[in-house]
Length: 293
Image 1 (cartoon, rainbow, N blue to C red):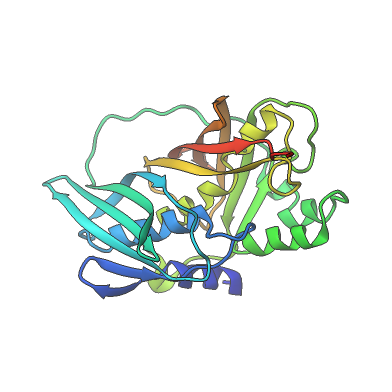
Image 2: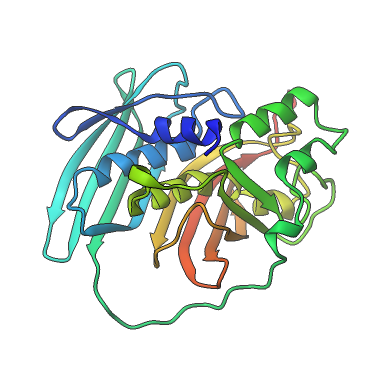
């Protein structure tokens, strides 16, 4: 396990300071604020630590309320909304400086057998044949070196590989609002940390990295790396359908059906390399052209 992955696991390992109250540390993202995927992942950890071990996360619904301060810890309070025979529901509020910055509702289910069907996995090249993030980013002359290094540092714990050129690599003309990314952690998860909740939490963390790319593609925008848009995540929902491992290749197949009113919608499916539909994701975000005056 590399040092960056261990640092990420430490970031997600919350301190319990009272019953139903947890504290997590923060760190800056590519932009000077807390990365939304970090807050969502930490909130899911807080919720998961209050449910029985035989119940696994099957869905989350969240709202990003305020920009997070990377220089201050985040306190997570958990409301035990329901403990049923099959399902357990939790509500989590993340607080900084006395104000809520994020709210999450999560549901957990005891395993049971049921009907089975899924949408087939789309075609995608073998991830091992694709360039790494470092190989792509360091090949772009139009992105300042300091921005490249900031991007790479923020994603050092994850091996993330675009199937096609990312928005910041090829922009200026609209493209199909569809993007594919393979990802896995940069190292194996084993020993005491290898538990089902961690894999779900790590997928939650990564899911916020690229989901709005397809919105950018539709409008020929390069995104935050080149400064031709401003924006932020507004809300985020995930459904965890089947078990998966975050340290094995996962295909993140993303598209944008619409943008309107300064907001863009991204929706996606995450598949295991052997074709099982593991996760569905939907996110809406603010996506605006920068003000010029």
